[in-house]
Length: 68
Image (cartoon, rainbow, N blue to C red):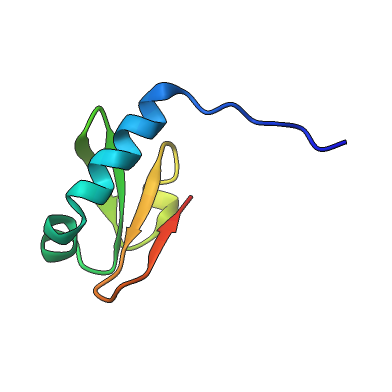
């Protein structure tokens, strides 16, 4: 049986904010990982190890979106 993981509401709010502001994030943080918390970028860097302690989004200079 597969376990269901319930994500906090904050995750979904931050996810929505990230998608709404993705173009801005691409311009400001191309090819970097960003950590978004409470609809703000609180960390960013080229190495996921620098940013992996919370919701991380890879901001590609192309069209791909990767969530960690």
